[in-house]
Image (tube, rainbow, N blue to C red):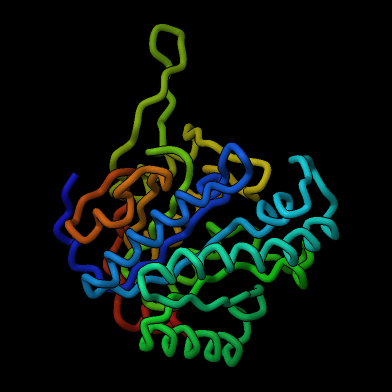
Length: 278
């Protein structure tokens, strides 16, 4: 599907889920390298790209040779602390091949709630973009408790997209589309949804959508649809796509959409956009 509006967007937030980074042996480095190549294509076409990446706990498990299982918060925090180093190293090495540098930014709920803290974070992101450095954002799991956690990186990526003035949020996961479940002849069947044009359609979809989730991901399809509602209400476009598929990122330069696109539900005034950004 071609969308000429998407082609014109200059600032894009890309959220990369743990399910995209996982491989048969733990970490799929070929996917990370391909993502770096495609992001480089966007940047060479004049786009500004901000990455929100999950995967710290996944990398932590991999480094320690731990199997996937439920863990208490303190162990997840320790794994995140270990894995974040190796996650950033993977991005650093992947983008280095294309002459680009990355920078780590770890955020908590307080960074959005307190004006001065967010202003500082935003100015840092703007400075990095001006220097052609790619911000790689994650939640600071080591200091976040259950009470103050943002919750999941779908929500985090939507908050970043809204506050940084992005025009598009691309959420990469391990399924190609959002699916709608319908009963036909007494049997449940799923059908891909290519576009969601208003909140009524989104609410209907939230009642029937099914999607993949994983032990490393906090959310699933439900959190992605909640992020979509945030974007739609704020005047942003959002796309859910399969991050393991070649061209899922670079095709945006041509306005090509390979996934489910969510359109803004209303025109947002410049005043509202300003209030969302502060």
